[in-house]
Amino acid sequence: MQGVPVDRRFADAITKAWDDLKTRDFPSLAESSGGRLVGKELWIRHLNREAVLNLDSGELRWADGSEMEGDFKVVLLHYLQKADGRIDSQWISYRELEGGALYYSVFQGRAIIPLIKSFGERPEVLLKSAEKLGGKVAKRGDASVDFPFFPFLLVNVTIWKGDDEVPSSANILFDGATRRILPAEDVAHLAADLIHAILASVQ
Image (cartoon, rainbow, N blue to C red):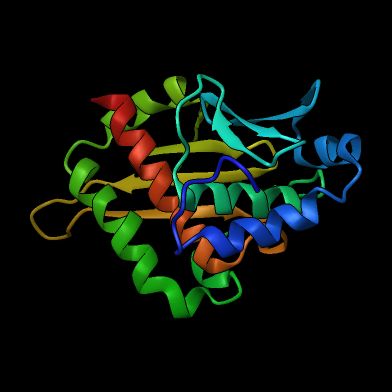
């Protein structure tokens, strides 16, 4: 797979996923993932930007030409492998994912704790990210947004503001289709990437 920076943490997973994807029917791949074919490229929406997969070389980049992080490449390629063109419209917790209990402390450290630190005392700021990232404000907690991480992979972020007796808290839920698409380890990366995008959008 050309165009991929050497990063041994992700290189094997990227190569394995691309070896599978390059044998697929590309129009069907675009339909099942919610992407669009542009010549020899597959364009996939991610929040407020688009990722581009070169179907000849396997190179991944952002539409603006900027470099893509290795962990995101793995998550995106695994999404392309397993997305089936459906969402379940039913929210599940991280622990309901296969392996979710095992990786929960990682997920909590990468996503839940940063959420609380950033928005626990100012949940209304989270709502500013909805319009910027293509999200939809939901009626949960003190502030809640449903984000289209990928076309068929939805994520909800909710904040509850604390008081003198109860500390602030946060939760991240995933559409049930996530169980069919990504393993818990990938979803931990996904959640961290989402929180990073949210923080960048409101600064």
